[in-house]
Image (cartoon, rainbow over all chains, first blue to last red):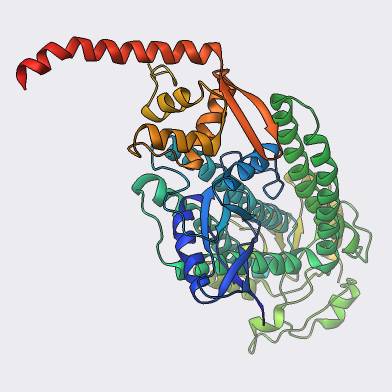
Length: 421
Length: 105
């Protein structure tokens, strides 16, 4: 094994710590050959004679967050300038560049003065903003998808899981890049343990992997492939844009173009995913088996007690039988895309609603928060929810997603439906 | 009101401009300043490069020759005026303080 990879998340203000670490590695016989993109977090080492050379790190004053791995003319000029001092350029990840010298040099590359601090702050800020924007992207997608998920009654039974998972990821994604920067900016404290930097990079990568997997679960594998394809297109377009960017445009135009293109990319990604989510819902939902085109039926509840034939005669597409005595919540998890209409005894239903309200879960979640206020209309109890109504008569419970106006307008049809036995 | 940069030359800036009264490249500037100040002031490459870039941008110095990776710089009129003003200021400071300093010590 002549090559070794190390994961390490490094901020520009940690460049001195990196230098110490790299020279320690040389003493162990490993020389850095490549320092990867700031979001990649990996360092590549190759075997060398222990103590055969010395590595020096420096920040990059002309670092551009747009294309950090590309060499700008300023960077090339600077690297050539340092060659006169016996410092050979090794690699750069954008904000940090590494130089090598066969002899130990007696002077630092950069003095600790006001100008250096200013450059360091500027470079660190650019890196920080890049990282935050990248990590912001994932939680934003989550929030968007979960919001749509709730809107369209997908996965309602697992809402807590997705909600908690999303917020957990959101917080972790944020903490990872923000804490070290804020700590350095306000207290001047820099992490000295390289192990900490490694753990930080593992955490960020684990979060990204988890995010992608969870994204796959939420929007399904097909949509995830679409997202990946979209990202690939964006990468290709950005390559093309990069050529344009490197052309002779003045810097103000460059900046405006960069910001506009970044916003467009973000918009395409987000709207693409939202669109795919909506498209999936619209196409995958089976049609109601009876002619009720105006409103949709969602889940209700069924306790059984011998009304199976009656229920089937109402053309319930998917029917699940529950015995009122040995009712088990686990059994009720079903395909959320199925159209269901359950029949239940009102007394049992009222008890059940009461129990569920006491537990503050399931029923109000499932039916979008019925407020418990009951109004009587033509002998039917009408429970008003946030997005739907629960209608209960002596024999039926009907949960429908419908607005108040639609309910009024279609009351006749609903009555007919309720009267079907 | 924030102080405008380059209003007053710092020591490294002053000695860099002195060095550029004759065309010199980066390492030559460092060596010249080392010799002149007997290593009291040592211009490190990172700082020197940033300073030279700033001088170039402000039109204080100019590139006179690019030979491969070697770039040679020389002071411009604007830079000379600044250097002269700084020299006069320092000289005046010495003159003004001279009699008092001699008397005290």
